[in-house]
Length: 101
Image (cartoon, rainbow, N blue to C red; front, top):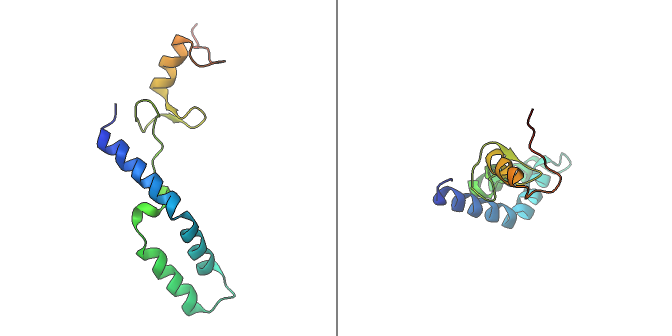
């Protein structure tokens, strides 16, 4: 299981990125609009750079819902491979059969 602090930090990042998503999108749109004057685009880039780093959605890490494990993550199930295999072996995931031969 992952450290509680790492899981909580990731939750804070996800919350922060959702809060500032609209503002970031607006600033990015202004910065990439070639019709606007260069000074206005540059100021939008500066404001974007001054925003907190944790406001960026790329800082959020995919983590397992059960264990908090960050590696071996399956997006479809929102679980790590270890938790997925364990629940699949118990028959708790419909349609999932553990392969053996």
